[in-house]
Length: 60
Ligand SMILES: [Zn+2]
Image (cartoon, rainbow, N blue to C red; front, top):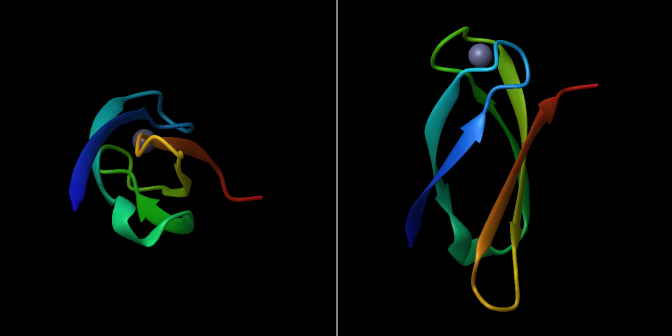
């Protein structure tokens, strides 16, 4: 199941929609920002109620 979540790029501050697949539960992956092309560390969390949360951070 694909969902779109609006996130804010931690580098350039632009908002964009990221497509996430919540069927696999929690996940961490890198996705390049479509605006500034820098790699964003995505942390996907699937809550018990099925609601998806997506955190966007810098890769440390
Ligand atoms: Zn960006």
